[in-house]
Image (cartoon, rainbow, N blue to C red; front, side):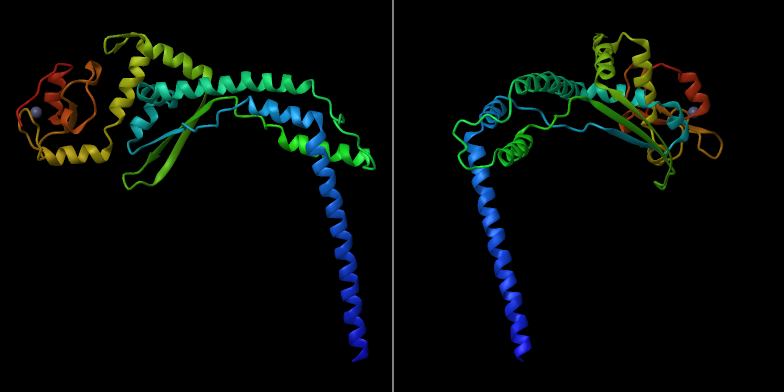
Length: 281
Ligand SMILES: [Zn+2]
């Protein structure tokens, strides 16, 4: 019994001593931190400089699309898809690129401002405090307060997937585009004549992607809507190869929407060519 009591007392005593030491150390540390926070010339200057700078956060614009038609997947490049999307998102993406460029300029200004700061200068006498400890704490606080480099580069990833009609993906490809490349594409897109793009490559890319928007799923539902018959001559799929036709051709600005798609037999489709004919339903 006595043995147990002694043991418990010893443990308690050790704990109390240990607690006292750590409390003392903690108190001491707090004294140093508060002295540095109040009197470090560089730390005060850093906080003032920090208040003059703001940086933009990173916003992700990565694009992806899944094709269930292998021909389209093969035929369309990641750049084609990006060009197509830029028709609608150029403004937002350009604004983000400009923000990243601004971050770069602002951050180099920020770093230049910090260069003139010298650690170890205190605005009050340090008295009995240890200078080496003060410097260590000042260094730590300074590094904590310093802004991390903000995002300064814009990159966008386009990923294209190829899936079976049941949705199982079995192929993919991706490409990265820098802000500069995107800005040059936007410039080419802006070279327009009314609704038409002057740049032939840009226009071809847009047409490829627009054509590729007719998925196999969509194709089958158009056939079903049209009763598996040619909208022009009425021949059924039993006797002819049916195809999907854009009523207003893509080359003339037509879109791959249900309203602009119809079922034609191969012969009628060839005969129609690039003309705009809406056959009676
Ligand atoms: Zn026909």
